[in-house]
Length: 409
Ligand code: ACO
Figure 1: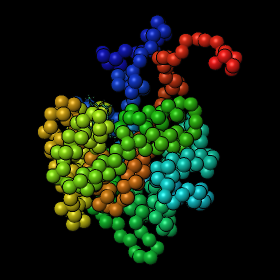
Figure 2 (figure 1 turned 180 degrees about the horizontal axis):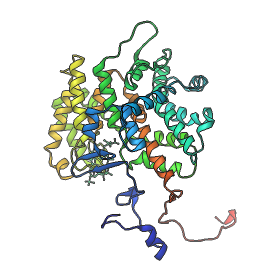
Figure 3 (figure 1 turned 30 degrees about the vertical axis):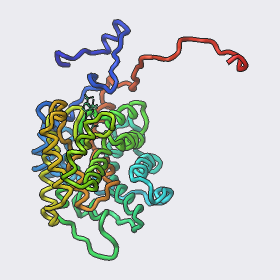
Figure 4 (figure 1 turned 180 degrees about the vertical axis):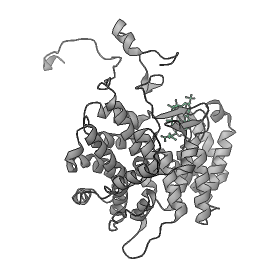
């Protein structure tokens, strides 16, 4: 506890006072040793390691290991972990019948919330959140099966047969194959797209106490099972102010493009600055970063690589995004409020170039964030001081009064 932090539990015990802090602007909900963000410097560390080093020197499974167990794996630990994960990439065959209950045009996040929640009905040996062995096997299952579930939700939506996992491929490579292969032709994983997918996973793996992570912690604090807690995180992530922002950002870029493209940026920015319009510049601004989101820089780099590989260097949406960023960064409205691009500003363009449909972007985010949610859940449950989360309220309703007989109301 630093010098500017009050332990409110002690204050409450001594005085009965509590704080009113809507949106948790100045309230730490927990202590955590997993992810550190310095919003003013634009710095992000997982277990002390800068995100730039992890994104360029490690792969997603190493990052998962780091987030879960606190240290980067050595070669043997990495191989063992990868083997354990790949043992669980298949989902229970019955789950495809559960999936079939959805309309084919259901939003993939609606499907995913249901599928992840339903895992507790299929894997009974990993539902006791207070049992470390159950939590461990639930963690491995969730990390292993999320790509399979996301790809199944996609294939179901487009009416194509599911592609079963291939365990000789990398985590990202296997995901790309389950998404884009068909039984009719051979599918080769493109290493540039594989690396880009892996980087998207690393950049989204954890981000301390954001809305969905706090939801997972709060949900898990009641002692519910790990699958239910992660399903709550998926549901929370769906919102456009959180994980849904990448989808909303791409829709926004397409809207500006339809208005007339680069020429119309000024008009769009004017609308954003008009508070009555209710329009925000999606992919801009962050509760914690008051500087450039370091993930946005890495994502912009990946955007160049992917578009170059696919011969899409002149992609009009990328050009539009870059111009929009440049104009916003020079505009007093954004400068004064310290609004910079966040990770979602470029991730949509990368995913769209890879061939991922816009409505699946948040599902990919959920896939990647699953490890962070689990690591945070484990940290909370392993803390001997953990209690059920139970926020207080400032009551603003009616004073005590008596019920009148119905004829007198
Ligand atoms: N466009 C225009 N104005 C904005 C934006 C934006 N994207 N973001 C914040 N502002 C303005 C607000 O209107 C407010 O202005 P005011 O002081 O004149 O009233 C000021 O900046 C502060 O904004 P808040 O909403 O108070 O900031 P908060 O920390 O609550 O919100 C949030 C953060 C939700 C991310 C916000 O910046 C936003 O809506 N951004 C767009 C959505 C987005 O990209 N979300 C992704 C977040 S990253 C992630 O989840 C992976």
